[in-house]
Length: 222
Image 1 (cartoon, rainbow, N blue to C red):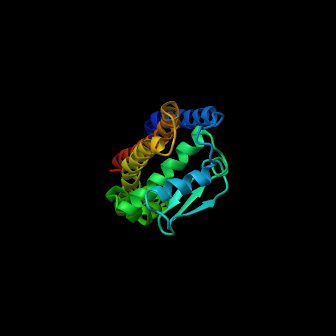
Image 2: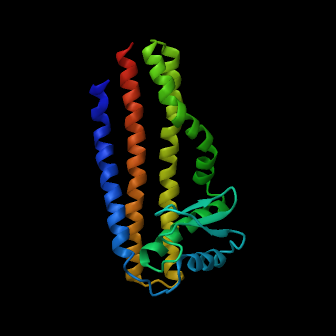
Image 3: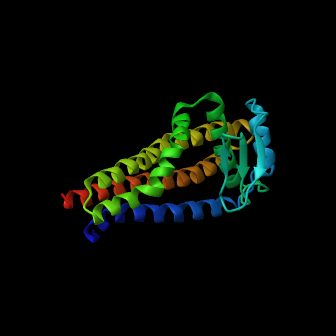
């Protein structure tokens, strides 16, 4: 079992690098005030209104970069790091999350697919390894295969997430100049979003590595 740990090392290293990159890039540009001069929540409201999303509410949520769009309630939640900040980094993150609201409004297919896959991915994430290890312990091929099958949904969710996040950032970069950001500010915001995108790539690679590890472990028992 320990001989398969090496499969996790590359994605673990990438995930560590991604987290450091996100933190350092965001911190760097969070000290750069945008010429727009609006705090995140007002910028979000103006941005959403500009594309006709008057029904999307804006709320504050606790945490550092816990920003997200909730499609079930049409709520854009901004973290403590972005809600009142007018920095280039904060407004870039706000625009990215607004990009998800736009995806939802336009029926962006990868987002719909990701939202539909959430229950299966959550179920697989919680139970796949438990079922898999029980199968290994009792030499039960059915349980081993069931564990692998469930984890496939976790992998698919991670892969589907990539185009959703990349597209949200692409929409954000297009919107920022329209909202009054200068070319240099947009470039800075893009660096923040690019760093953030790396975390999703690392997550997808980790999921794939975990699946490969399950397959190798299963093969050793056959």
